[in-house]
Image (cartoon, rainbow, N blue to C red):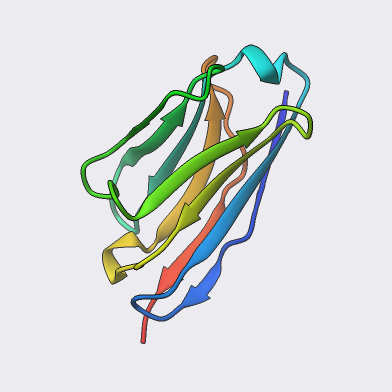
Length: 111
């Protein structure tokens, strides 16, 4: 199983970023995929999930600002983030429903 996140960076408050996660080594199209994050000094937090039928769920802290989507033809899951806040600063990981997780991509929201 391989999960490779990309798209992180430094952005000002109110800005936007789009994260991508390229997956391989498992049946992506039938797998629920998740985005998690870990802020400095804190534990791992679930952010959003998308089922194989594209049903989506979100943590309350990101609802209305983040959108999870998937492209089964490309074995890729995305996280579109708008109106970013300093408290969104974290390493963002994608994970499949078997618990495999990538190396993460850093998102820093700062002026």
